[in-house]
Amino acid sequence: MSLEPDRCLTCSDEAVEARVRSVEGLEAVIAIDARVERVAIDLVPDARPGDLLLCHAGIALERLEEAP
Amino acid sequence: MRYVDEYRDPALARSLSAEIRSLVTPGEVVRVMEVCGGHTHAIYRHGLEELLPDELELVHGPGCPVCVIPMGRVDDAIAIAETEGVTLATFGDMLRVPGGRGSLLEAKARGADVRMVYSPLDALALAAQEPDRHVCFFAIGFETTAPATAVTLLRAGQDETPNFSVFCNHVLIEPPLRAILETPGLRVDAFVGPGHVSSVIGTDAYRFIPEEYGRPVVVSAFEPVDLLQSIAMLLRQRVEGRCEVENQYTRVVRRDGNERAVAAIAETMEPREDFEWRGLGVLPASALQVREPFAAFDAERLFALPGARIEDPKACRCGEVLTGQIKPWECGVFGTACTPERPLGTCMVSSEGACAAYFSYGRLRRPREEAPVGA
Image (cartoon, rainbow over all chains, first blue to last red; front, top):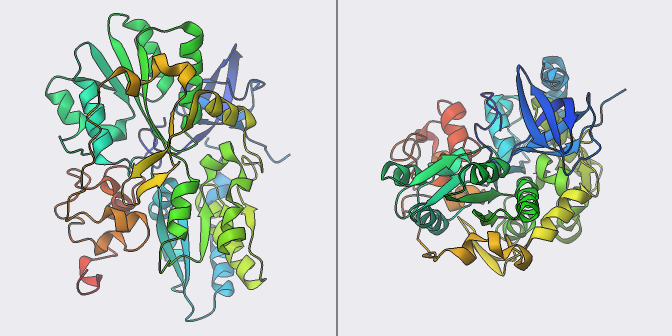
């Protein structure tokens, strides 16, 4: 789902880490570099703006734990 | 800002490289398989092999989801795409994978409605936008991608979308690992476990590897420092006489994975009796099929598929590459008859495929002349 040259252009089995900008229902707007995308958060329903999510194929798979 | 700067720190990478050198015994080769194609890609993109001692050999595993799809399933997808009134949607890499009747891209050139999507949810949205057409999503991928398909099936069920289906080709990571571990003359001493698959299934899913096969596993993230640290952790286990599953990717992966994702998969899909893998043959319970309650969205129930088994081209040695028996450059057609522009085998198609990674990043350092006589 990412277009960076070091990531698979399509899907394969790689995911990207992205920051949540806003949440609306079961959809989050995430920022990947300068781009924004929408991902489904059915599997991470308590995601909040500011969270880092692992996203793949249009959905968030997991929330990242950041070092304090 | 990619939040990854600390994982690409050159000083840290050099320090880990020195630690790795201190943990190997001169003349004693340790073979480490990175299971995931994303790791293979990262290793070559960042030139990590140059930071490793001669005693550390990396073996590339079967974890590229595009590479393991057999040609017969591509032909089945082409048959769906060529059905009147049907749009076939899939990930971009799948468009170029050669089947017995060419690729999906070639089917598109012949007039089939084949479209690239980034998510199965995009395919479902396409079905809503085009109610007069049937949209079928050609689903591939390991447990990383299966949750997206599961969520899509659940939403299709809730919305009762009448013109959407999934051609399910999701595969599971454990069966091919067992197949590799049971290969006679196995040349792998330790495993770098896949990071993103593990975010779904958790690290406990790999306990069978140390417990039944006596090989250590470290689940790893994908940045250069992550991979070097994971290799150092594997070597430290050997030096300290331990053999267990460790987790390097602690910022994402938990022991039990994401229970919601696992539940979504279990609600919508179930293991099929067996599935043919490119290079590994037919493996029991190694892939998923759509469950009965979602039968209305199951392309295998809706379409008459050829279902043929097609032999790989004889010159292509993808199977041996996928099981770590040979390096890509030991295949006779590597870089000649088989290139990323005109791939003969699947390992050359996806950027995560071992052959494509070698071709793009390591070809000049691994000239064909280095291949053993007879390879």
